Length: 252
Image (cartoon, rainbow, N blue to C red; front, side, top):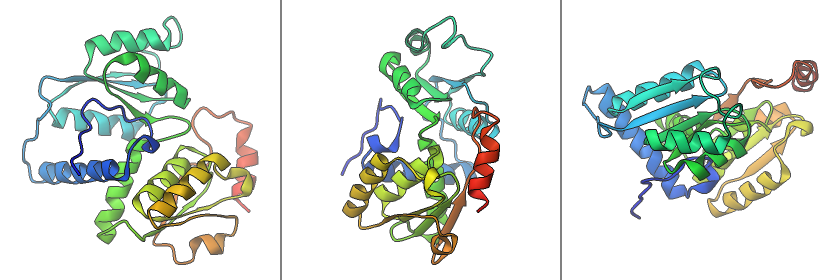
């Protein structure tokens, strides 16, 4: 099946078919090979993108800047103090202004509804570099890494330990369900993903002949796992009083 993603937003993996996600992984693999071989691939020469960060990050910023420049694009970085978005300017106004100047917008910040609103008004593609609910760009990198290690994705037993309600737990569950990996979330029940998302992923898992499992049992979660993945226990922007409760829950 021919895949054409030209002009598409990349806000969450639920918006994309398994074939489209597979295409993005394969494209990433090819571009990585070209970079390692020293083959120029400035396919987007003359384009400009803006990185709009309400949450700072070393790796995400550098990955987008280097990737953009490798492809020949001009890259502008706006940190939390360099934009009036949500302060003197509405999200919609910010989207319209940036969309007139840039060919694409990457957003890293808080609620998923913010990146969705940016995409609604920008008129150019918007990419989600992390929201509270989802982190789709990280999934392409993670799935590529797993495939590089094992040579395949389908049938891999993947376990996530930690706060399974966060953007990583949610996105990994979706990615595994769409690509045929058996996903297990090992966490206290209070930290399991939302039931509606779990139900959606279980339906996707049936379609792609894999499983979704939620457990509080560490031994059950680790047994037969090919990949064990974890993440920060308290996310940026959460209040300080979350620490004690979260650490007690995850230290059981």
